[in-house]
Image (cartoon, rainbow, N blue to C red; front, side, top):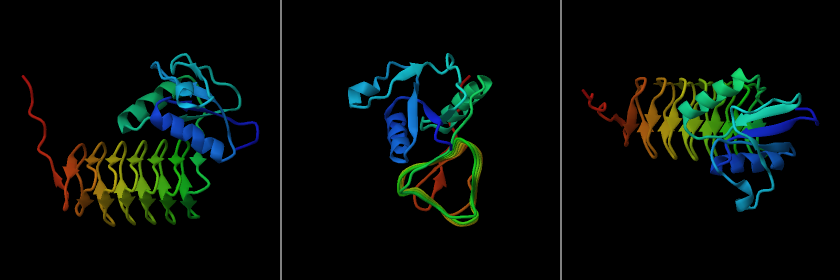
Length: 214
């Protein structure tokens, strides 16, 4: 990023405030937040304003937007709304994170302090790799994947779009996690996870699907 780049954070809640601080700790400028709620960052001691709602955002030439909400589907929806407004998305890697080279991180990714990205990993747009999370060598992550604190995805695993990996959950090497799946906190995944399923436990097992309503 050039010295004139200003980050704009979509979401002024707890995660958004954390991301704004990460950006400042990386020596980057933060212009403000985009938020559709009554969030007030100043009430938490953060001197960064809310500049507009998401749908009222007007991109400036040197803006770089990051989506800072924790749910994968919400990340995707907000990114789509901002794309329609002509937003340019940035990339944030905290200086205390480790990203091996070669690896590929698409625009919109956020890598938090003490997270690690292994050799030849490829992350799609708008992935969130939270504190102390680990992505192993040769992993493939789709778009808007969220790895919660201390979550680990081991080597050669393929995590498809919009997956949530809970805190301290582990995906063992070489597995496929289908789009929209959720891995509950503390789970250990020893076999492939079908798209849209929620798994929990050690070894992780799928929860039964919700009953259909008439």
